[in-house]
Image (cartoon, rainbow, N blue to C red; front, side, top):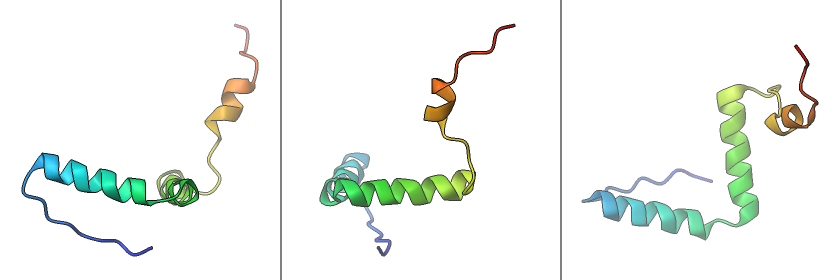
Length: 60
């Protein structure tokens, strides 16, 4: 997927264009983008929050 630049004249136009770009992607493509962004931000070996919520809470 190649990045595309779009110059908007207003915030409303920018939001509309952003929504159109998002709706044009399939759920699989959106998931792939989210995975790439997560790895860039947190690395490949980051903890999964869903796993942390499933563990019983530690008692004091």
